[in-house]
Length: 198
Image (cartoon, rainbow, N blue to C red; front, side, top):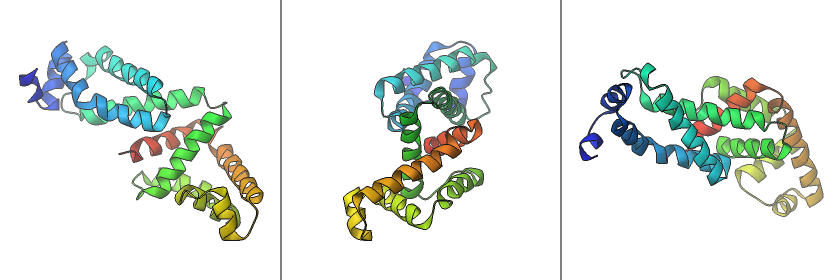
C-alpha cells in the first residue's frame, strides 16, 4: 500500500475507475476517519455513523465508473455523506427528539464558530433565531452559546428556572416548526451542521 499512499486523489480516482481495489482502499484510508468523526459528532451514535460511512464508500464503489478524476474527490465523497445524513434525518423528521437534537447541534455550532456556510444557509438560521421574542432569544443564546444551566440563566436574569424552561421549550418549538416540515430547510440545516464540524 506504500506506493498507493503517495498517489494524488486524481491518480487514485483514475485507478478506481478501472476497478482498482487498492486505490479504493487508499481513498478510504485518506477520508474514512475524517468523515466518521464528523458523522459521530453529528449523530451522537457511533454505530449509526459507521453504517452511514459504509454506505458512503459503497456508493463510491458502485459509481466508480462515472467518476471524473479531474473533479475534487474530497468534495464528492463529503457530499455523498451529507446527502445520506439528510436522508437519515428526513426519515426521522417525525421524531421530535431527533429533530430537537439536530437543531440543538446546529445552533450550538452556529454560535460557537465563525459561520462559514453559504449565505443562504447563514440567512436561514439567522432568520429563524432572530424571530424569537427578545427575552426568549436571550435565554436561548445563554443556554446554547454559553452552555449555562437553566438555574444559572434564571439567577442571571432574575426569573425562575421554570420560566427559563418554558422559554426554551417554546424556542425549540418555533425552530422545529421551521425545519421539521420543510425538506429543503432540513437539508440546509444538515448541510450547515456537517460543514461546520471540523
